Image 1 (cartoon, rainbow, N blue to C red):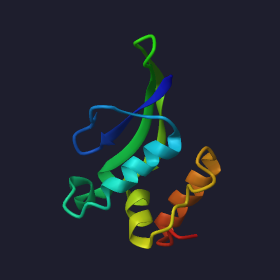
Image 2 (image 1 turned 30 degrees about the vertical axis):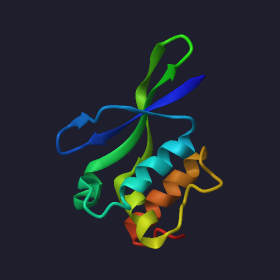
Image 3 (image 1 turned 90 degrees about the vertical axis):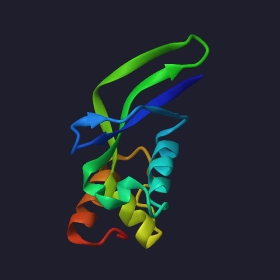
Image 4 (image 1 turned 180 degrees about the vertical axis):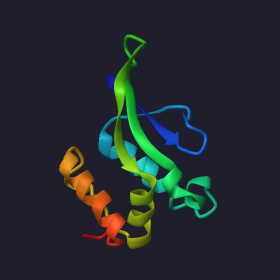
Length: 115
C-alpha cells in the first residue's frame, strides 16, 4: 500500500521535522490538527512557525519511498489552531480541494476561521 509521507516545517528552525505516514491527506491534517488539542504542545506556543506538508510517499510492500518536489502545503499551524479553538474544520468534505485551503487561510487572516 502506498502511504503519504508528511512532515511539519518549522520556520524558526528553517527545517522539516521527521516525517510521519498517513493513508490520506485528510488523515494527515487530522493528525496535525490533533496536536493543537494538546495545550502544552510546542506547536501551540508559536503556531505560525509550523506548517504541515506532503513531502513524499512510501510503498510498504516494496519498501520504496519517493519525494514530492516541491513539497505540497497541506495545513498552516494557524489554521489548525483555529480549527481546534472554534471546533470547525474548513477541510471537512473538501480535503483535496486547494480552493478550500486558500479560503481557510484567508479566513484566519481575517480572524474568522469558521467561515
